[in-house]
Structures are given as structure tokens and as C-alpha cells.
Image (cartoon, rainbow, N blue to C red; front, side, top):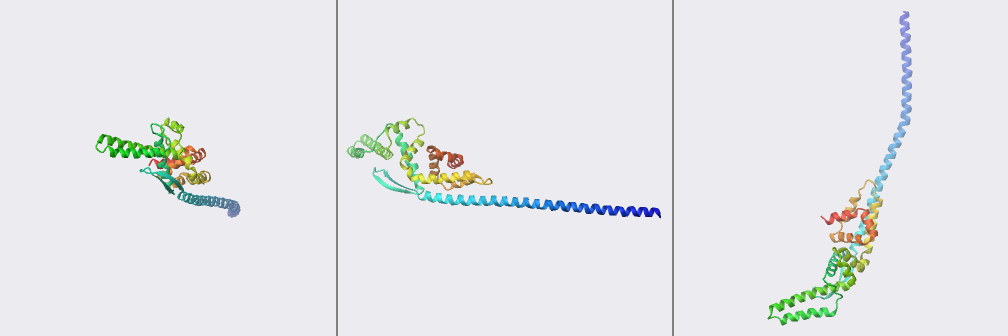
Length: 278
């Protein structure tokens, strides 16, 4: 009976001690949970805030970008160039180019300037005597109606005189000096030189458009959120341009150092080259 009493006492003591340990463990866990849960809640709240702020910045950037790009396209559509041109019949006519036609006009004019710079000699300005020369060769064709060889010669000379008139017209229009002609002779690629001559006369028609494009490229380069890809937005800009417009901004980047820096730093040069070589 004494053994049973001792064992009863031990069992009672063991239960009491374990209850104390269990209670103490519960107390510690509750204290840890009380500390950890607010920390986790704070971290989750902060992460949610960061996500919302990033999403807001991305949406704000996209909204500003598309609004700015929309305004830029309106500027492109509002372009206007008033010019005098020479026809195949060597008549001078006045024309107005609007919107994106202005880039096609620029491309055609630069090609004509290149042709004028590529002649065997400097032709000088267009004069009334040049028109008279064409009329004389036309008269000779009638005079040599019975002489095929001489008539063909007169036809060829009229063709040469007409081309000379065309080139002289561009020399006069763009104030191409003999010095300009001599400088261009040493160049294997006269495109950039010809574009510079063109822009000396026409820059005022395009300068607002260029400034607007420059601002968009700077905005994309400097303000784009980290999670967005610059190239995506540059490709969007390029997608709204015709080939002649892409050609125009590429040429412009060669002659304006400030625009060139913005154009290359943003990566627009690679996107334009990609579009032009498709």
C-alpha cells in the first residue's frame, strides 16, 4: 500500500509539472504570434503599397506617352510646305504639300539635289536662255525631218537641255554654289550633304515636328518605369511612320548633334534601322 501511495504521488506530480510546461509553451507561442503577425501584416501592406505605386506609375507613364504621341501625330498631319516646282514641260508651278506628303517631298527633293551635284560640271542657275535652248532644239527637229541622224541628235540635245534646266532649277532654288558642288564631288555618298542643303531652305517647316519627337524620345528614355520595355514604346512610335518619315528622322540625326544624342541614347536609331531594312 505504501508503494501504491508513492506511485500515486509521482503520477500526480508528473501531471502537474506537464500542465505547467504546456501552459508556459502556450504563453510563449502566443507572445511570438503577437509579435510576428503585425510584422508580417506590415510587410504585406508595404509590398501591396509598392505594387500599387508601381502599377500607378506604369499607368501614368502609358497615359502620358499615348497622349503625347497623339499630339505628335497631329503635328505630323498639320505639316505644310509651300514650294515652286519645275514640270517635265519646264514650267514652274506652285504646290502645297500637306501632312506626311511633306516627307515624300523631302525625299524627292534630296534625290534631285544629289543629281544636280553629280553632274560632270557645275551648271549654274536657271536662266531664260536655257528655256530658249530647248525651243531651238525643237525647231531643229522639224528642220531635220528628212535627216534621221540629225533629227535624233536634235532630240538627244533637247533631252540634255531639259535635264540641265531641271538641275539648274534646283541649284537656284537651294542656292547651291560652285563651292558646294566641288565639296560634293569628293563624297562617295552625297545623301547627307544633299539633305543638309535641303534643310537649309526648308528647316522652318519641320522644326516643330522635330522638337516634339525629341521630347517624346527623351520622355521614354528618362521616365519609363523599370518593369516596362523601352523598345516596345519606340516600336509603337516607328509603327505610325511611313518609310519616308523614318528616312527623314534618320537623316536629320546626322546633321543635328542634340537630336542625334537623343535619337541614339533612346535606342530609336536601332528601331528605325530595323524598320528601314525590312
